[in-house]
Image (cartoon, rainbow, N blue to C red; front, side, top):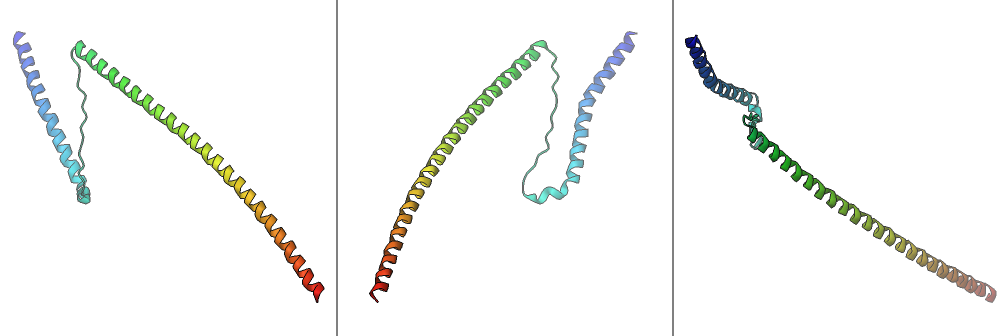
Length: 143
């Protein structure tokens, strides 16, 4: 019985050692296949990389706690960045509203000035028409 257990343990160890090698070999074959399929994209003049994401298993509870703390800190950092971006957006919205008010005020001022100038020109044209009419009447009476 002990011999069977030792043999099984030895076999398990060999399989585990060769599993990593087999995994890497499969990955290399996959990359080679991917390269052969995408060979037509090589002449674009830019480098592209194949990225591999793996999951690391956590064996120890301390490591799991450290990992949880790490992600909590990352989330807090992201929350702070989101808050800062929200503040910046609020400032931009306020500046935009102020600018809109200035533009509307300026356009009202321009419209008022234009209305005044139009009235002035209209009055001058009316006077010029009356003077022209009077001059024409005098010329017609003198003949």
